[in-house]
Amino acid sequence: MDDLGIGIIGCAGRMGQALARQIVATAGCRLAGGIEQADHSALGHDIGEAAGLGAMGIAIGDDASALFANADAVLEFSAPEASAAHARLAGAARTIHIIGTTALEPEHDRVIAEAAKNTVIVQAANMSLGVNLLLALTRQVAAALDPDFDIEIVEMHHRHKADAPSGTALALGRAAARGRGVAHDAVAVRGRDGITGARRRGDIGYAVLRGGNVVGQHSVVFAADNEHIEITHRAGDRAIFARGAVTAALWARGQPPGLYGMADVLSL
Image (cartoon, rainbow, N blue to C red; front, top):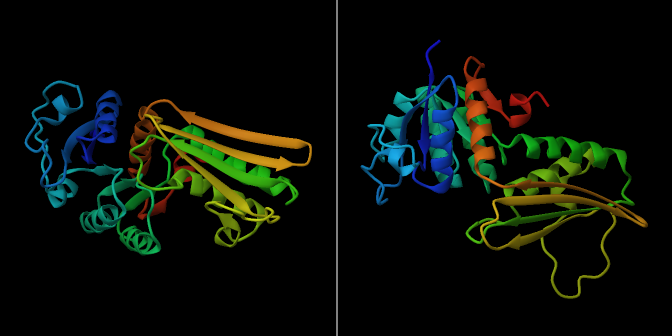
């Protein structure tokens, strides 16, 4: 079987560079191209040089349609509107689309689900193996403990992160809500300030920290009287997300069209 040709959206950014390095380092893959926004300073530069890999003879472009037409799979960690638009291109070209974008709104999700009728799309708030194990554990622990255990989710990211709480934090909250058999939005408390009164039994709270160059830290706290359980994942390098995204692309080859998650990829 030929190597899987993988393209990258946002290839000159920190995540895009990590994806390029992972593709080159992974057996069965080849780097098929990459794009950036039309006004980006990296346009026309060699994608390999941008990622510290040396010249590869592949110029960074800005034509998303061409990228989807020429690649077997496209990896994307970008903005919600862009990811939804690119999902349409993936569906039309029947190209595998791996989406690690966070802060998607219901309308974006609808577009992505429609596109997945024609191609394989793997969408996840977090692509790392460790975080996806944390999601599974969070659901199991929440199901095992009664609402006397308060659930709080604490996350920290670098100073440049635009959305809060993080997509991973919200995914953890939703996993806890599923474990308890409740609607997440009915119990989520996404910020506290001032005189808030006593904590409501059964709520799932969020605390958000931003600073430095922290790649990502997530903790789920189950706190009852005289007992405190905490499960934590710390990401030290974006390479863990890149590795997961490339693993998802390889897994997706040969799968029937549909919308999948990392739980499917990892058989969790």
